[in-house]
Image 1 (cartoon, rainbow over the protein chains, first blue to last red):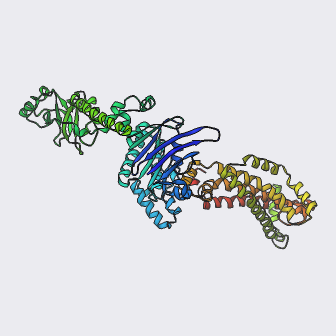
Image 2 (tube, rainbow over the protein chains, first blue to last red; image 1 turned 135 degrees about the horizontal axis):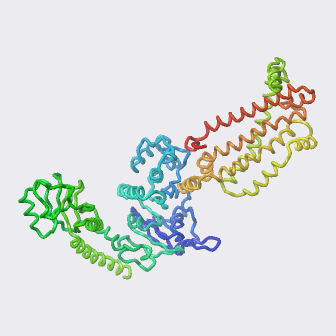
Image 3 (cartoon, helix red, strand yellow; image 1 turned 180 degrees about the vertical axis):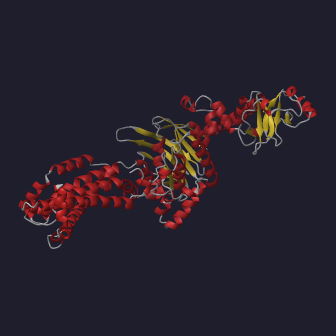
Length: 381
Length: 222
């Protein structure tokens, strides 16, 4: 565990970058430092590997002051990923990744074998091994940056706005890749970003810092969205935190209806029985069970269903895998107000109305509020 | 054309190809003086340029020294050195080194300052020692510029080393000085041509060195 113990960073000109900050960073999880520019988040990160020395306070790594070991030994035990990847342009991708193992005295062959292994882990094709950084896209370079940081298998990974310089689509891919890698490797990751959505997506714990380097709130993302500590945090979270919070509730809580589903080759009798339920629409699927579109029962004639004339079904959500937010989004996007739940291979498992989703949301909120209240009671108690 | 006739006459005269005043001897002397001067200048200027460039301090002082160095007339310095230390190799070397130090010093400093700071930050953050950062991260990237500083220094040395002949030592300057004195313009033009060819050859050597020493990852677009 990394413990930041009332650390202050004051520069000679009197600027205070970090002000009496205390944080406990749990092992094997992603802790995100987030805040506007000038909130000291990068300074805090850089104090953990002593790129910046604190003016007051101390930082403990597994109970020992980080100043007790030689600075380069400390740094080699922590992977370091920075915004523009910071690759060595004169070295091949493979040799970039092999840097820290080589510093630790591994022979070239072993270091390169390890680097090749890491390339695979971060999703880089082995054909890129002999390329130079300028031949890679921004997203690929950032993957190399992550691989390089992981090469010596350090227990701690420090990431300073690693995905800020890439476009949103690539960023989303990199974030998902990081979560996948974290699932496999279980590193203690400290992640700095100015993007609150990124913080909420990646963080196990999120520390919101305010200008002047003071801690505004330190909480798991769901709690942050439910109970922002003050106006600053609430403002920083943005306008639709209620909707975003739904990302933390599983759609498995939804009870799906299977009655209003008909296959495209249904008989007149089947259409009539299914249409007799309490839903005003029927969902037509293809022969594999994939959704085609909605129709009113009266409009369907057996043997003559034209998929082109059906109402669009919005974006289906993966039941159990995706969150209530995805389910709500699907319902809002569909002109019928019903969301389509599918399984991993895109086959319909059931449909659900906005109303049912609304009830599930109210239930989840009640549960969330209870959890938040419980945490507060613990803290004050 | 007259000049071409001179060149042709000079190089086709068999007497110019052997002996202590033959082309091979004079060329070897010239190359030797140039190499020694370049080596001394590099030994002085490279370390200073690398260290100041790495730490980013002393840029103003360097600019001052460089300007002063460039303002000194080589010929005047040669005469002054002869007065001070007498004849020999030292008075030849001093003006050549003084001429060569500024371009090496300033270019090396600027080359290091122009290295992207983010790989340096990454290197420091992963626990590289400062000297390793300098030689393994900064220098390989700054190498094309550093070589260009050495190259312009080398070319200036090659063309200026002709002044050695004024104080009675060898080199290609002999042909020019002696030719002028003897009104043998064939010799003057021949000597000047050899200096020009040597300067071009120097360019070629640096081009080749850059091909070999600069990583393909850095070379693109350069």
